[in-house]
Length: 81
Image 1 (spheres, rainbow, N blue to C red):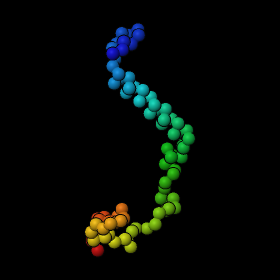
Image 2: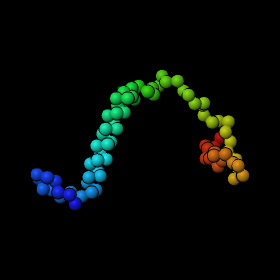
Image 3: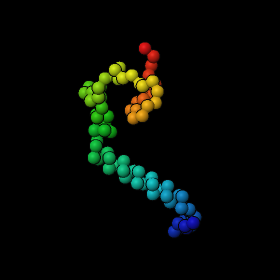
Image 4: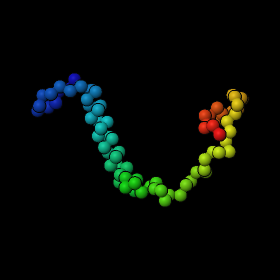
């Protein structure tokens, strides 16, 4: 417990950690807002932004069971055709 000077309140460590964490979060927000203002104006990804990934994985067919060296997509759930 720590006694706050002048008002004589007792506060604990959890409260101090919470206040410090909140201050660090606000400072991080301000730093990000200064470094990348376009993100906060929603100008980074719009409907007119060029697509940088390929289309749907229509050519992909998951394997029919586990196998040695199977890819990360082995056993993925896809919609029925």
